[in-house]
Length: 420
Image 1 (cartoon, helix red, strand yellow):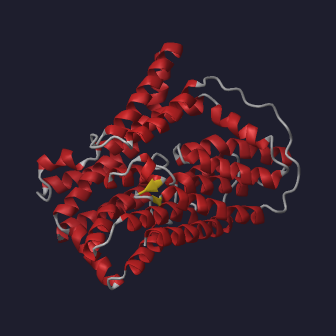
Image 2: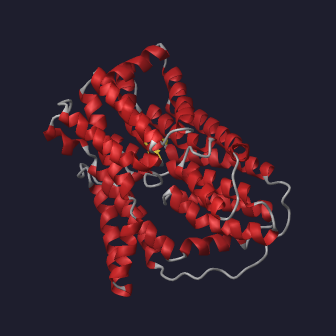
Image 3: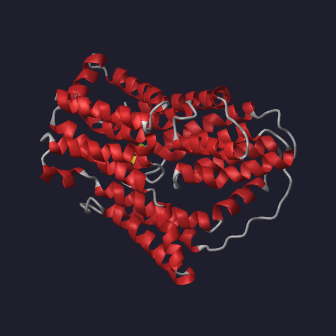
């Protein structure tokens, strides 16, 4: 157990220090667990959650086609055409980023919506930094709303065998979607207060043209089929993954027919292979520390710390996750903590759902506390840097801290009273 824990902590430290190589570090760590005999070779392939890998790969392909079609830009323009002034425009753009990110990767969402925010800022000669930050934190918030909204949601869905509809209604109770949406609604007054001085009118402009409506149909079909799959009893574990990949293949094949092989190359380039390899390595690492008894030991330590109180452990999970995710990537954190949460629930003799939702809420929203806490934030800051703007930590936290604390507190209270 000591050897396994040492390797695991070293893996985490290296992933923090060398973030560009974290997928290689995870794979090397997985190989080390096998080489040392902590995990047997025959347990490598069963340790990997192929449903999660396939869901991510298929969704990434569809999203790349959706972005290329210019439909997100069209939707943003339609929303802006109905706003009264810049303050409203920023709030609407932030909320729009949240809605998109419930179905599209957070980084992709920022790449979609941020150019609109920059254009408005330039036309009205207002600072673009707070506008882009608002878009980034809002997109990061709503990634936890649906099964396909964020990698952490897909991880939870795969681990806990949750379907698309379970995020809306589970066991006859409101699911994670409603906790996130209530948090989003609660942040609206925060955004209005932050941008209250910007009262200039938004200039009218021509709506962006959509080059292809088929990717939008694919995205709608993805949601519809995942909902339908929720009703299939005893379905194969990789059903959702097959649906996502199949639709991705259909979209790519059609793009090839219309535009040639180069279209397929463009789609394949947009798939985030680094994240896929990272997850594959992490699944094996987690299987290794589970086999060594590390997960059981960590779970037992949490139970002792909470003195057997479900409320204490729930509170610790939510706000501890917020703090951790403000500084480290939430993907390896959630992947590690899911089996720990299961052990905690077993030790306390309770349904783990409330702890799963608390973990997802804190880990997803905690990234909004700091500029480095979420990929969406890093992407937004990168866009600003290319435009010649440097983002200071205090500038980010002026928006990120009140936004995060408001959303987390509302979700925390909602999840406890519904699932306690």
